[in-house]
Length: 71
Image (tube, rainbow, N blue to C red; front, top):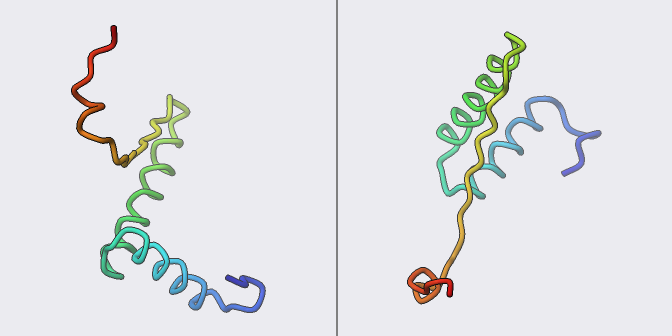
């Protein structure tokens, strides 16, 4: 994505399109989620208190590894 040649609207559309492709969401859902997450980060940093960082991890773990016991 060449940000130097794009207008702000084009950049927003390109970013949301990319988010939608990466998450499998539609355009509006991806935009809402991105704005909500940004809002949460900004609000949580205002009071000077500890910030919360949320991580979502997706992994493909073979079922046999889930049932093994560490010995």
